[in-house]
Length: 119
Image (cartoon, rainbow, N blue to C red):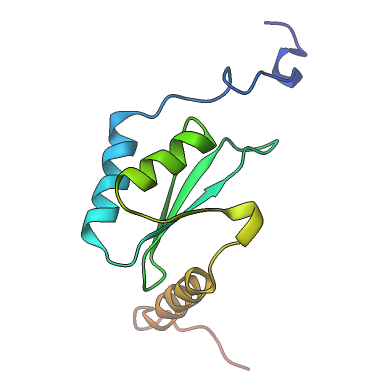
């Protein structure tokens, strides 16, 4: 492997990892254990492969790499989950609100003696 091999552009299929059974099972369990799940397919970028973002009705979410955009839409449709292109519709506000709530909970759940100093 030469010094510049890591900078060469790979073909779309060469860099895409196969979906391992664990990832697919995780996505299926997430869909089966939550209500109001929607799928958001995130396109391949310079730093990440295609991913499927699943967001439940309350904003809880999970994300896993998938082989292709087409695979992600077919997977979601097969399980009765609406799927959208995240590059077109964006990420749902309920996910951002869920993340905000989780950050607030982690700040308020600090053990005694570890409270931040207030000026």
